View (spheres, rainbow, N blue to C red):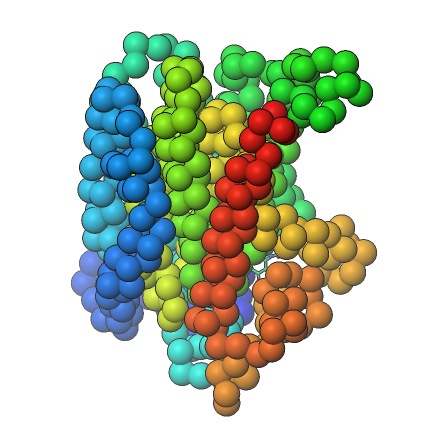
Length: 426
Ligand code: UD1
Ligand code: MG
């Protein structure tokens, strides 16, 4: 990605030269650093309001509605405290990392500001790397505080972390080397290998009750097909987050909404179940999603409109992989796919371009009018464009809020569907 920008950016050549000099000579570094103004401060007030709105149901279920077993409650609260520390650490680290990535010419231009002064600002790229690193540190430290004497848990937990770490690395490689997208579609399947190889859990699925008379059994062992399904889920989750993108705040915003829904789902399952194994599976998912949510909110405080940093494929792949592994190991991949409804629709709309049947430009973004500040939907097959064509021109920030509300309504629909189908479907 950086290489692409170096080639296209008019100001890139002198900046690059200065960066090269700075490697060897600290004195010469000063003019270069001075030319990069610090990024705008985080929008913490907005993040606080958003967090309260998204987490209110989770807090309600956790503290009030259900009586969660004390040991489990303690682990979840310790994890939450670590996540909160991770939030502040990420907020602190992003401006520092921004200076470093700019120095290495890892930046992008905000395409939806083209023609305005903001469109000429170098926006630091790949800040997902900060989120990925802080997340991994939290998740590794947390093992010390989890009180289950279950080694299978640790094997799967560490395999999940290996996948997330591998994915973050490949995402960063993509950001730096700008891998052709048909190749990068496959990167997540390599990153999923640690989990696919270590997975020792069941490979069975419950047949939906209305179908059992046709299939003849209640439970079906899928064997290796189950692992294939896990691999495909990973490829879908990572890429679908990455291609539902391109307007300020959307990549992180969708993750934040889905992660909040996953938390609510997990706590409802823990509260309503008496099976310790099931409770453990959902607690496992909470232990990874709380840090994901906290660090993502920190990133969103800089990435929200007008973005002072871009998240990069480092972040989209990292977030997609984290949600895929918690869905797999928490055994709620069907629910996860319904939380991903806008991403599923975006993927279906994208298929003709992804398959090469229709021309696929490098960026499938709406058209920006610098005079009015409005975005107009183009013919490219994405939810962003279809939404604009259907509901009319919009400002970038209001479009992002609309799309995140659609995402939240989709998650609400999923809870309603689960409520309707409980007992009848499975
Ligand atoms: C995916 C999409 C592409 C979309 C891009 C935007 C497919 C197949 N690919 O590509 O259509 O244009 O994401 O993220 O659907 N950018 C902005 N504003 C933002 C976010 C990004 O202008 O709010 C631009 C910046 O120039 C940034 C670049 O997009 O540098 C990042 O693009 P990248 O993530 O590399 O694109 P892809 O993931 O390959
Ligand atoms: Mg991307």
